Image (cartoon, rainbow, N blue to C red):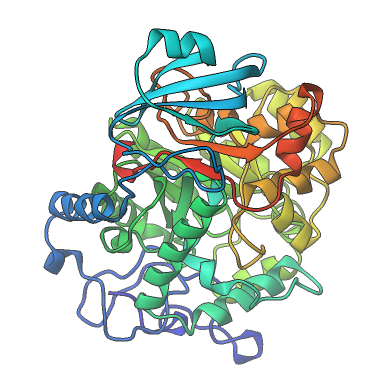
Length: 493
């Protein structure tokens, strides 16, 4: 069950707000442990109880049946007048003016042969047609490219779009605001929010997401329209002794997902014990991925390095053990708590000192970094250190973060925002951050992020009638909804 409201778990001085920082899992009214992250809110009576709903494997089967029922049975070739609609489970050749494979130069007058949701041939249209027999869907003056991959989002909060203003003073103010907004949400609100997020992401050409959810128990009740890596977001700020129990419960709930992972929320809300337990679970043959938020804000830096600031005061006020604060940066704190050889998908990394860059160069941790440009602008964070991170060899991806700090779930808009901040970066490299880089970060380089034989046929197309040298600029500048090819079925992870 979800707690009635955040204040059931946290006791915050009224002067600081009754529904504050995300709370840890607490005991619900029937004695069951409640949701894995805090700020879990007004329950409308439609409680989530995985024991009543059935075993995780049964729930997973039910979800797959529902997803298959929702998935289109025709090619989704919208906006290309020359293309015919054909069954997605059959054989089809798709021709376009250019194909951007992300694995070599663009292919002029190219084609892709698709069978049963996979690409079986890629190359010049004449050669693909000669090697394969089948009907051709001609996209005309379009460029065909891999579907986009959102490496960091929180679809739980799609319904909070426009409800929270940028913080006027500090990141901590936003924490207070989002928890006040979440206090009014019910279980059904979260289900609708996640489903709406999937639909919106798909409209904008996204074919896969790394979705962090505070409610993994809701996974069987939503319909992922894109391939999803579900991360259970975990917070134990008030009860670090429960870290093992929290992770064990998350792993049971994640059995309902095809692809999943664990997300200790951030060093200021997740204990070292929780981080280490998550690493242990990932190492124990469970095929779990790991992600976290790190070095996002000035408040986080002040808390760990200086032992001061609004975030420090807030967490101290709710009883967090602050003995780990003062003397270390957030990055140094994180690296001291985890196995640096274990792969992590790390969101943000805005607040890094020169000593942090030296530490990264010395330790070479196995990190992929996710930057969310428009959310970054919303908060007014310190400039993202893209050049230094790239020079150190880190894989850098793009995400949208949540709509509590963004306008929509368009990765095209994220690419445009990134380009406005880093105009010196080639548009082809920017596109890589939303395709092949993100696929690598999620362990899916062999099936997503490129137009290649054996990959899923999760393709998109945008109009293009200009010269080849303007191709990548046109893709990054694209606004609107692309042509969507294939179904991106969530049960094909």
